[in-house]
Length: 492
Image (tube, rainbow, N blue to C red; front, side, top):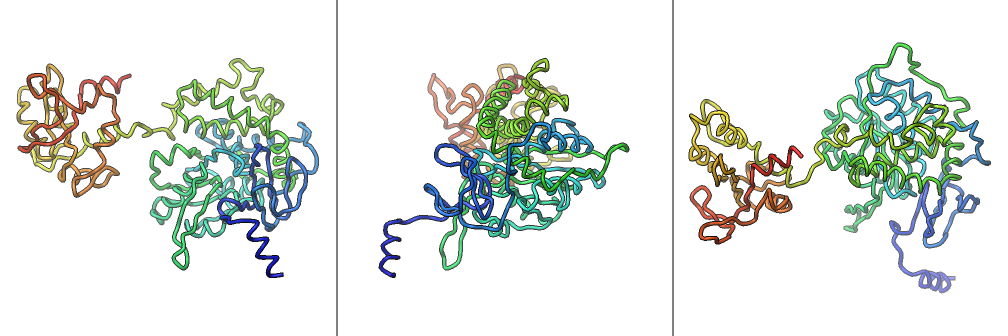
């Protein structure tokens, strides 16, 4: 027996749990077909199979989860239409658009591990806007998804890792507030960011052995005062702003035959899996034409494509939503979701611009006229008060933060930024670019700016190009920001 066991293990070869074990939720095989792990059994290409080893993966037996409906769902019995009608009883800032995002999130929650991109949602609003009735432990989303969803009001990053394990189940966290456990909230939001693409995270474990974990779940958050969310995390989130409920609204809508809603929706998604692939590409293209980058296409497009697939043409027509028979068709979503109109994309900008703006808004630690000014305020004085401001005076005050100026107001000013500086590094210490030792990363970000805005060398005389110039009495290697070109770039 022992020899047989050893021989079987030798034949099986080495393996890692994070690469080969798949828990409850949706997955894809190597051919792109949908696999549903329902806990105690699987659906492979629509056929029921036992758990265990299938292909290159092991699907362990787990407690039962959501199971798809036993037969194809007739369009007249599609619960997605009813859910959309119920969502309209809440007062969202973007109306039907936000309702479509939430409906799409339900689909993403059901198919999380099978998708390339799993965006999340964060609902914000004052008390009395119906957040708990929608996102809470006994809310509408829980009624639809049921025991497939992990729902909590108090969780830690480590606790979620241990609870989710190798599952791809959705996670709902109610009352994630910015004034309560700020650091922990940021870790959980970072976890949702990593889960969007399914990146592997490595953590220390027992006996000095590392533990790798690949989160492949979508998250729903809600709170009155959400924590600060960095722009990089916002590109994987959609913010649902909830306004006070209207007097005519039904605060506690009830699903008909609630216990069948989740199974019917899952069956619809299973039967329309191939259609969903085409829908994703269609909405990505619509948003790309509207000016969205890759992140915007994936985040907003995934929710819209999922909601469209769940509703079908019949549901879209019944609800009066953009469909193939309306003027403009689905492309209308691109116009209503223009990037400059979306709070989720505020602050999403090139790194070189972020660091330049931080430098321009850095406070110079010198009292002038009874107070301290920023770099931008000193530069502005050359235009608003030219009679009492000299270029030499501004340059002297900029030297206090290890910056300098070249050129003239008439020909165009160039801000000289040293590649290394303890003083500038301390001024940026509370940003990702600062460093007390003076070796901050601002130079690497600035070097990626367009050449007409940030030059790596300048003419130091007789046509000789170099990056070594004198700043604050010492010769430094620097970068050179053409402020006139930067202003023109901002207006494009």
